[in-house]
Image 1 (tube, one colour):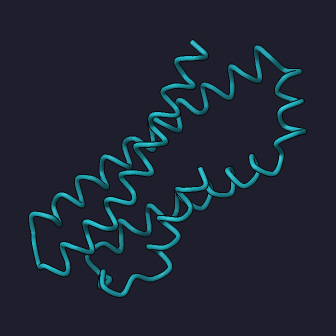
Image 2 (cartoon, rainbow, N blue to C red):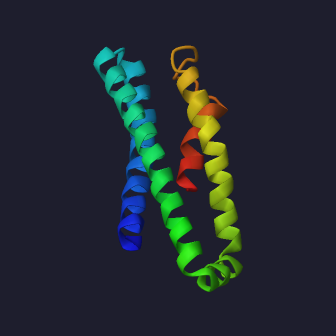
Length: 129
């Protein structure tokens, strides 16, 4: 079960990063060419990313609980050695959740040609997960 949770978490994280980058690029290209089909595709990719983010979070939590419950001494050793990378990942996750909400709510309100900090934070914080 532990190996399955680890593999599922890795798959979900890769899909999240790919869907995030493709969403931003596809939305920008749709704006440049005024293509409503690409706009719909960008929204569908964004929805895929949100659903995958939810499932990835669940599998990451399962993995963490199993690791801490079954191997507490190994978890302590891991956290002592990799405290800073884990802290950076937690900050990235904490910033990415509001960034996803902000990006969705500003979808039709902000010009995609002039992306603001919401687009950069949305794209960059998901890379730190």
